[in-house]
Image 1 (cartoon, rainbow, N blue to C red):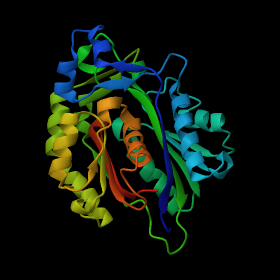
Image 2: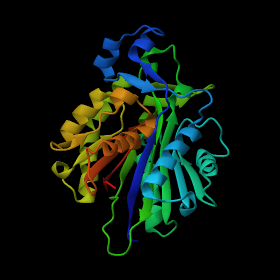
Image 3: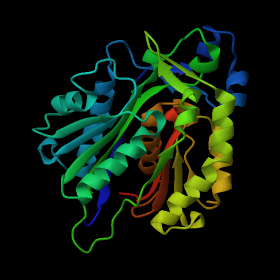
Image 4: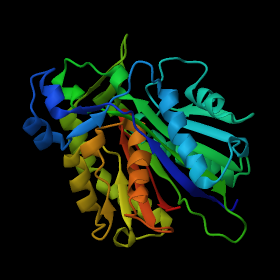
Amino acid sequence: MNGSRIAAIGHYQPAKVLTNDDLAGMVDTSDEWIRSRVGIRTRHIAGPDEPVDELAAHAAAKALAAAGLDPADIDLVLVATSTAIDRSPNTAARVAARLGVPRPAAMDVNVVCAGFTHALATADHALRAGAATRALVIGADKMSDVTDWTDRSTCVLVGDGAGAAVLTACPPGEEPGIGPVLWGSVPEMGHAVRIEGTPPRFAQEGQSVYRWATTRLPAIARQACEKAGVAPEELAGVVLHQANLRIIEPLAEKLGAGHAVIARDVTESGNTSAASIPLAFSKLLERGALGTGDPVLLFGFGGNLSYAGQVVRCP
């Protein structure tokens, strides 16, 4: 019951980069139009031979190496994804098989863009309860598989990638490195962000999502800080779901974290759904923008009009 902490983070993106100019050759759009509306310049796109579990496994392997752990040390694997094509084996089981993790509890968490923060909280709860000792928590999505590349309103937004965190239980007397989660949803507005149909396709009601995110979510994000006992002005970093720069910047400003580093990875990665938070967080750590022990708010929101956030301490 001593809580858990993040021991290490890792991320992975496919090699192929799709620029705004590339998209302008595919649909009626332009670099200026995309940048002015969503702030995205580039995104990474996986090939047909790169399934989402492969993206997840690459990120997880990097996190394990950074933590100095072997796959055999892991007893819980959670993968947040909404783009798995197959129902069974689930993505977590396939990642465990790729990495050689023996006998883990392996589960997928489908809360779309808020998936990683939901999975992080679930793993933290399992470690607090003693049901696991070390966990791999991964956010991975291959949005290119569920995108209509003739629809300029959605195809300009998406990218593929994965990010992973290794969680370990805190020893007695050590302060937890993952704060209490604040989570919830607005199910009656779940239609605002959808991945549905045969074949499944991503669609959203952009204005509804924008209004909800910029008007309702700042107060909820502040409540996540309150639950952790950390004032917004004490945050060293803020990593929001990387949906749209026009959502990220006003939300961060209304939160009141004036001295924090704000993740803006959406500009080079696009909206990678459940991957966006660990991907952006990993990059901030990699370039030294955050230090060990720094308090950072992770806050996911989107599909189902779900949200989940917690304050964590940097590994």
